[in-house]
Image: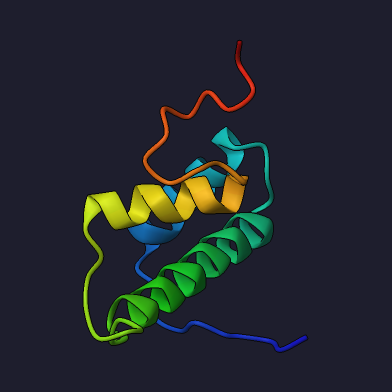
Length: 85
């Protein structure tokens, strides 16, 4: 694992982070690691949002519904109640 050092953190910021860690029942290190992990996931999501759509464009709602139904093994355009008598 890598080691990070953050210098020149204002005392007020450190105190606020320490209080937030205590409220969540974590050490400051565990709390900050969780914050960094969450931020890393968000940055990955932002990268995905910038990607071009596959297939040349957006799908209509009907196309999305049909794809979900197909994945479930239902007939396209059905009422979603497959096997209900």
